[in-house]
Amino acid sequence: MPTVEKLSIALPAEMAAVVRQAVEGGEYSSHSEVIRDALRDWTHKRKLREISLTDLRRKWREAVADDSEGLDPDLVFEGLENKYKSLAPKKER
Image 1 (tube, rainbow, N blue to C red):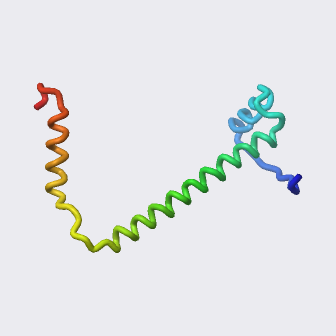
Image 2 (image 1 turned 135 degrees about the vertical axis):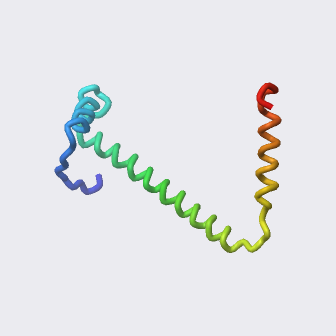
Image 3 (image 1 turned 30 degrees about the horizontal axis):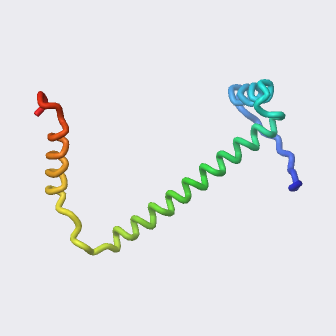
């Protein structure tokens, strides 16, 4: 078993009630288990956010380094307008 360190935390009354309800309802066996599960989810979410930011930064660098002409925005918007006009009900056209 990994080394366990005991910490004391303070929670707002609403959060403490949620933790107690999860244990009293049988969802978890202890308050510590609730907090560990919440921290695992939080850690996972932070990791996913970091991966997303890293990917976004990579795409941004690629876009900045791309010296191709790109697309004419007027043609892109014209194409989008035509597409959505064709999808609109006949009364709105």
